Length: 452
Image (cartoon, rainbow, N blue to C red; front, side, top):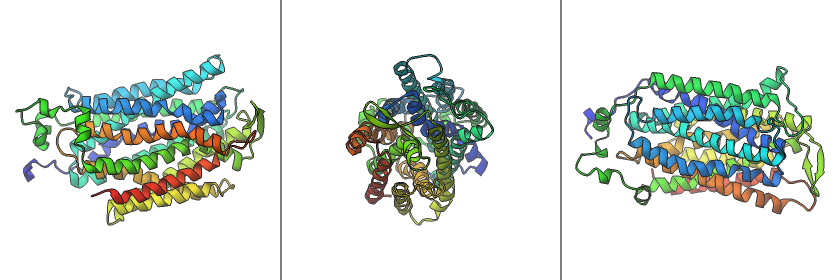
């Protein structure tokens, strides 16, 4: 590609507009990750079964994302190439966000309410991913290699800013007087209203991006990406997903290995933080249920712990924002990646030794360093090695390195927790945080396999 066909540099605000809808998408994602275990525990789920409720969402993601990536690679319409998918995903997410927290409010039995909640969770995670991936794809389409690092850093900042808002909503609503407790089996209003506000912000942010961003038309896109199609062999430009996997660049697999350890660790965090904090920092009372001790999820202490988890996740988001500024100062992406994961691992392991709810701020600031690296560096390392017209498809396939570890962690989480639980005793959910820390250490060591 000669210099005159290089994608031109964009202003900061052009890069900002490409990713702004990410802010709203991440609010939805933050509300999901911080409150799903709380919601299902409130509905009546056993702690040993919590991880199983997380299997379907990433399973749907690993099926849907490559399809969305491949279809959007081949989509050209008046509304753009990627934007139609992010808009449709956002609309579905908004509808589901209004249903999910009300799973216990429709007069259904406990089992039916859980099935309804599981189905809506599956749709929510799927629609969030459908909305999220096009933002990454648009950076690949519209930003030159020199500015990709900045573009993904902006996404990381907006992602963490959205997380901060989503995590704080339940605490804020409880603080201004909206009820933080509810009858057994019903989610408190503070959580329900948080999902409503998050849904409204999501659709407004996505509308902003769709109005401000004009994707390149086919002719201009082909000028900047001439290797996509030369018109001589159309079939060769539409290989199967399996063929693309076989010929994927090495970075796809090496970065994917690091991703495996990272996302399994964070799946354990999302699943078990609420129970860990409720037990260690809020002295939540216990009940005897089915021959085992369990936390009293209807107690004010448990719901207060749920709000505090939002605060801790917000602290993590602040740590991510701060660390995202530090990452570009490293001499190499690999060094930044490894150091960030080691710091996050220390944060995870420290949770098992800290009972004071304010001291936990330190743990989650450290975890935020790992999260910042996970958001920005994998896509930078991968897209710098992707050429041709299959960027969207590869990014869709790369989503498997996010979904597969979550599925594995969800399947194994309950089994591991059961093995650690003494007969008739309380499930030691804090131990899962230590395991998460070990996984991040393994991820840091695996960074050495990546070739920049």
